[in-house]
Length: 292
Image 1: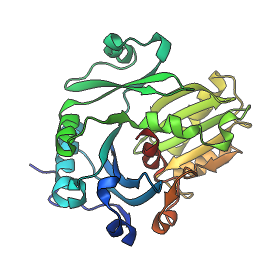
Image 2: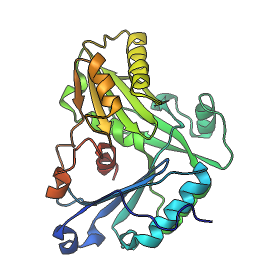
Image 3: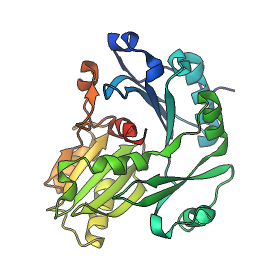
Image 4: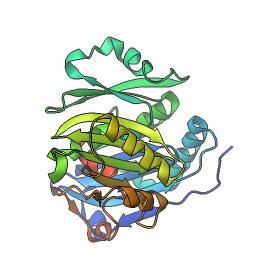
């Protein structure tokens, strides 16, 4: 039984450029999260994003309801069946861990992950090799049925983790090498990804749950102090589908003097309607262009 009888996008952004472009030369970049399904159409020749859609839904049981809702998205959104040049599927899941490339053994990828997270039924454990200077392997788990469905529907084996794209995107930020440290917070539904650098060196990345804005402040300040960084001096960059009147932003603003919004990646072009939406809303989705 379907969770809902109809599903509609929370955001739809496109213009005449989409109809004027040969989409068989474009990439479809898809992001799947807990209760979310989003995508952008990316023209690699012009380095330009042409269209964006984002669906939000409230799952009852993650593996079952998310798959049901995504099936409904496919029934409703015919653009997904376009013969794109390629399709990249990204999973924004909580179960992921980073392993230095020099210590990585592909035969042990499940062991790396299950040192941190318990093994789940119906999981598929995947790994992304991150390019230098990161030289890391991102090991993560996704639902086996969900990844199988998407691979079949899109006829692609190109799968990555959302954090793999974010890590590459951070290197394009002017403050990436801030000697006092920089922390990136990407907010999703009731959870956020916290990534901390000092002098351009990655020193922490973790996925954390929260109920209130103060929870985010607590986790951030606690992580910074454990790493020997001063929250009064560290730059904190916030992204996600939130606004400056949200509880998360308001609480961070009280305690963090150097709080800024994450900006769109500067080396790409965006249609005018995308520029009307705050760049930090879909920063992680745009970052997938770095993985194609």
